[in-house]
Image 1: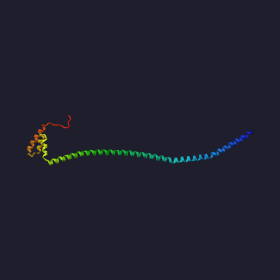
Image 2: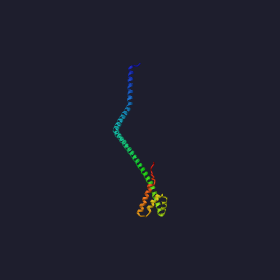
Image 3: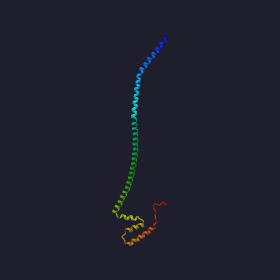
Image 4: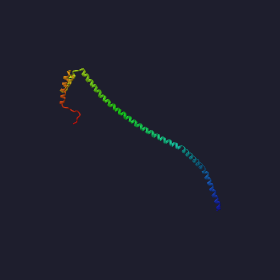
Length: 174
């Protein structure tokens, strides 16, 4: 066999050649790793400079959105109150229109009655026949042209009749 020293030398030579091959192959990888480290460092610097103002802008935007939503809520509440006020105004206007309609009907009925009375003065005499005798006398007193003594006597007689008449109370429930 050959000398063991030869084999030892050959082994060491092969190990050296292998290490050289590994270093030659690893050199571009190490250069890329150094380049990536520099990129990460630049990214960290950029983030350190740019991130706080961006986060502050995001925080301010959130506050502005919150204020706007509060303003919108107040606007919606205000609009709701306006709608309620308009609704109440419409209800009031309807009630007033109903009252005006009833009032105008009463006025029209009064005008019609006045027109009929003016056109036919004898009709009012017929309505006196429908009254009870005690009230008929009181109306006759108002229509008579007599001296003051007769009017006073008739008035006293009317009061006596009224005092003797039964009193009916409206609105008493018992």
